[in-house]
Amino acid sequence: MADLEEEVKEHGSRLNNVERDISELKKDLSEGLTRVDQSNQYLREQNRDILKEVIKRNNNADKHDFEIKKMTKTNQFKMFGMVFGASGLAALALDIIMKLIK
Image 1 (cartoon, helix red, strand yellow):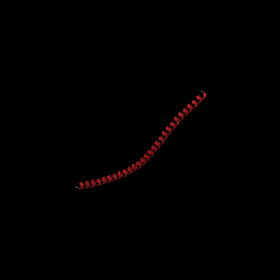
Image 2 (cartoon, one colour):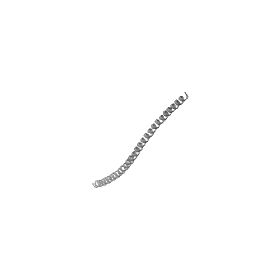
Image 3 (tube, helix red, strand yellow):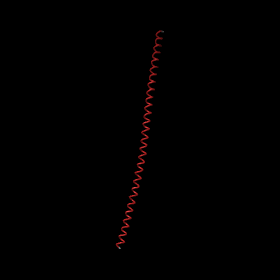
Image 4 (cartoon, one colour):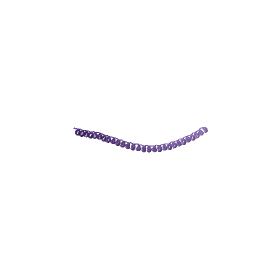
């Protein structure tokens, strides 16, 4: 009977140790998860800022591309105007010369 009581006391002591260890593990796990959550929040904020900058640069690049295309079209129209204007002027000068020669 005394052996049984001693075993029960030892078992109770072991259970208390296991419960204390489990409590410490829960505490460590909770602290670790808190650190992970803080790290994730920091990374989400950084990613949001990076995304804003990328979108801003893409918008600026789109505006720049539009301006370049607009200038290209304007220059093409000017070039065609000069070519046709010069050919019209040349035709007029040739016509005047031909009239003077006759």
